[in-house]
Length: 215
Image (cartoon, rainbow, N blue to C red):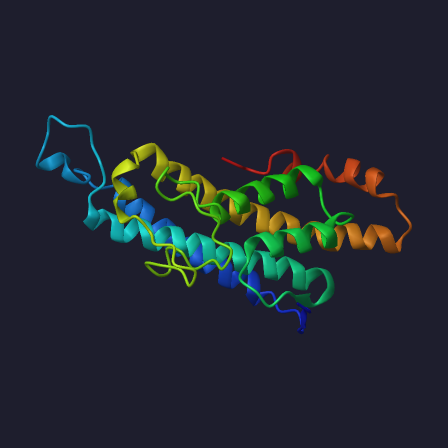
């Protein structure tokens, strides 16, 4: 599948950040509830998220997955003004890894790749583990190939899981910004004939790189 050429527009990343902020609103809403799920009705049981809470959780997960797709395409466009016209996070991250091999700090890309895999493989519950190659599970109740979302997975989630979603959102925002800046920085170094390893060594001395603020 050939890539689509486009005039690079930073709105691609900002679009993604808008979806991430929307997901954060949902997470904060659930975390701030005095009684989560059935706790108020069954006080002797451990807190679980109800199907009503699940509406927010499902929407939040898909919003993060969509934001990830936008970030992948935004970074690809930033490299060569092109992106692969598909929704497959696996294909998009593989293509981006090839494009950015000489244009980023490896540790940051590895972290970004790990988060992409988490949402590609739907690693949220034993009931949701499925490689969502079309990035449509959670957007729809079922996929074109017949896989359906077991909605009861929301009962498996704990407050710590929602906090981890919040951390993922924060880290994706930071990584999108850092990787975009690194593309420009490493490319400038290449044009000046500066060795990648030496330039990376200098970048790692910067406060924003030494202390990127990941959670």
